[in-house]
Image 1 (cartoon, one colour):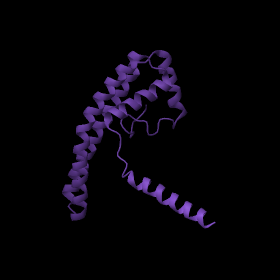
Image 2 (image 1 turned 60 degrees about the horizontal axis):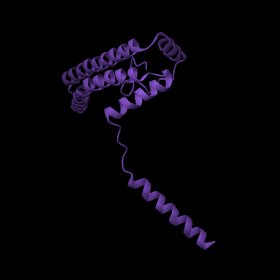
Image 3 (image 1 turned 90 degrees about the horizontal axis):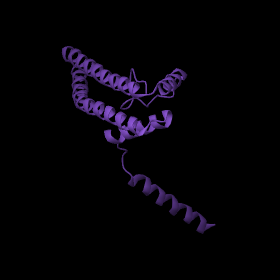
Length: 153
């Protein structure tokens, strides 16, 4: 009995050390996100090799455009946070407007990429994608680069 308890305790300590050794989760890089998105679309719609190449190019272009926005959004969020702490109404309004504009740019970039991908699909693939979208919910979290308003596929 004593040996069993000691064995369980040692196993628990060993497993715990592995969990803590992994460190914080880091999100995938844009190239990995593009690959996953293309793989997901391929699974759903049976994309051809040519369509996969085109989708990869479209999504990479969108990710590149959005990467510059991410840094600006982070700066604007920090500005907004600082302004809130100082009760600086003018800066709050300015930072909010900046964030709104940057969000609109991101949504526009993603929507244009979605339109370009939809255009490379065959009519049958378009019909299948439209049917999947009408079922609702399947695409949550599968937006262009992490989801968000206006995200379809």
